[in-house]
Amino acid sequence: MPESDVITTFEELLDSTYYTENEILLRPILDYFEDTWIGRIDRRGRRRQPQFQINLWNYYEAVKDGIPKTNNLVEGWHRGFSQLLSAHHPNIWKFI
Picture: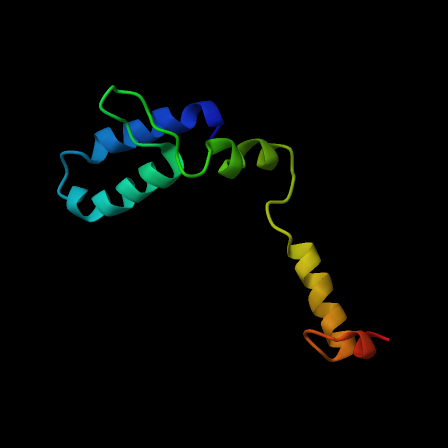
């Protein structure tokens, strides 16, 4: 979802789980997510800064633009190179 919708959607999720029997099970997960990724509401009614800003972890635009989220291509190349040298962490002499 777009960055601008993350907090609103999270608040809707909180509202939908608040009075259910599953709240006891979900509360630790929701608290962690709010503290780490969204930002908890303080006494003044404003959201604190989360540990990780939304624009750092939200991949909506990247997925929409077809940009890969992982470095799997690099990992595949590294594995092939390691197999070619028959070593996972070759020293300079093994490389030469």
